[in-house]
Image (cartoon, rainbow, N blue to C red; front, side, top):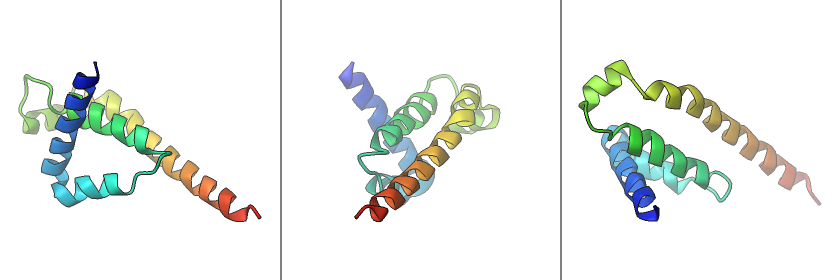
Length: 98
């Protein structure tokens, strides 16, 4: 199972590079923390890896009709914002400790 997860993560990073350029994909990962890294791995693995590389449709068609993307993209942006907000609050909390 680990090999499958690793393959999906690698495929997801490739899709991110193709969509956003190497800088866009790599920069996002360069800014991960221990706190949000599991979430970024999930997004890369499932959103970009499993969903965007699923057989049967080319990328342009898949982008137009979204299919399984609706479920992923309805919740993932909320998750991204939640992690960003939580990280900001945790940072403020650690700064206020003596």
